[in-house]
Image (tube, rainbow, N blue to C red):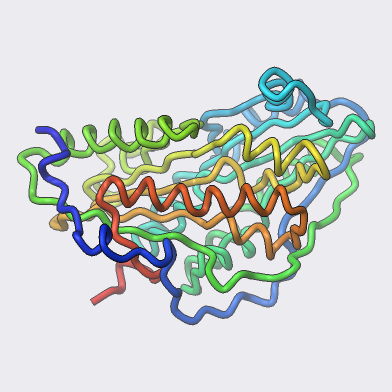
Length: 343
């Protein structure tokens, strides 16, 4: 069964579209002021780090998904220059901890997987390992559930302990939060008529989704099936995510965007903690709608106090393009609430 005839296209979207992001309900960020933890080490540790992110993290139930090593070389090849000697993305996911949380608030997929970054500027011989602080991620997602927050925050403790054990010489510091945007998420629903086979239906949607983004110059840098994870000990998955027909996360990348932010003029490789952008999509059993969500890129502007005009223009460009692509697939804007609590 093909997807196109089954999608219900909302006529209102073709008549009125004043903003791609609806106003969020009131959310007060936590008192946390730490955006990211940074471990700074003298010299080149690249090969050892790549082994660490693959093998050592599995020992603490973090699995490496779709790693992207030496992104700086991509910049050099496609743009012609780079200010970095190293920039690599290691997307990590802990199914054992995160999947039960998705039964409480599925928005946790906005930072699942999350990025463990390593970078080194040409102007220095210091290597930095960094990742977003879980409190900051939860505040961007606007998740307030106490049990979800406590569990997600605790999940990062073994990872930091493993990094500190592996690199005892590292200097530990933090990137500070400069502020939060009022709108931090883009949320959508795509209604559809009940298909004969939900798996065939979503397979067709996945093809159209990825083609729509790739046509606009985006790269599908990763795809992770949370519902049917190959890292799961439960081969049937019935106990892990009951009530979901499917739950997947795409990692979106855009080379010229990432070069402009992380490299180029006034490089900010520390912002790579937000990349690749995780866009989750799921269907609950018994519901004829695809729910989609992703942190907006504009939240980077406030959190990192970005003022560079070229960077701001690129951020605004993608925050316009991405919703437009979802709308072209039949998406309707929704507000950023826990969808499982909507009446």
